[in-house]
Image (cartoon, rainbow, N blue to C red; front, side):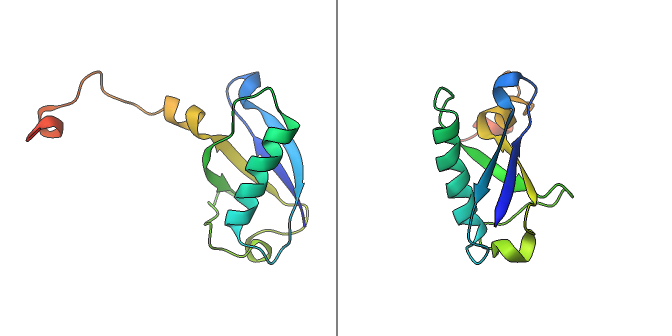
Length: 104
C-alpha cells in the first residue's frame, strides 16, 4: 500500500511530506517503524525522528496493534507530529506544586 506521511508543525523544520510503501496486512507498529526509518533516509540532516501518535486525516489516532488495511485505504494519509514538537507545547508549571513533591 502507498501511504502519504505528513508532519505538520509551526516551523519549516517541523514540516515534512513523503510517501512510504507497506504491506497492508502488517500492523500499524510496522508502519511507524517504516516511517521512522524512511524519514532518516529522506531527511538525513534532520534530528532522528521520534513521534508519539499517528492520526488519520479524519482525526482518529491509529493504534499500533491495528492491521494497516483495516484502518487505512490505498493512498491514505497519516498525520504525525514529532515528539519534541508535541512536548514543547505542553503547559508545564515553573515549579512543582506541594502535592507533586510530597513524600520526596
